[in-house]
Length: 83
Image 1: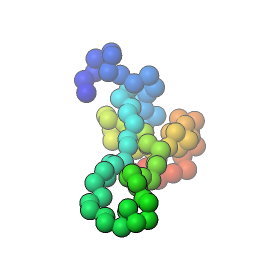
Image 2: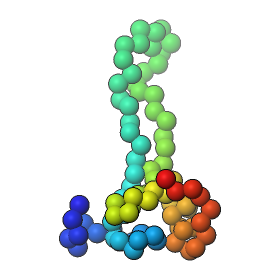
Image 3: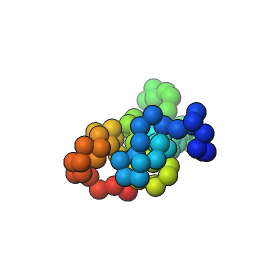
Image 4: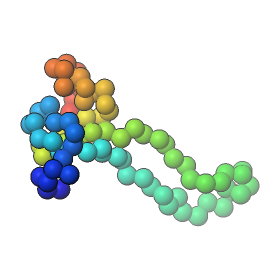
């Protein structure tokens, strides 16, 4: 990512002030391997555990678990343990 205006985030990082915020999504495991009992038990499709994406600053590396944690730090209420 460069500092071009079209690649900047709308909001700034509360820690470093850079406009380089991005969503941080956990990896999705798509291959469950061969499971012969799926047809017997009528299990079709992939097992997924929906997780809300976090927010990450690409400049300083700070990660917030969700939007509420990000907003709390913006307003000076830090009650989480950033990664």
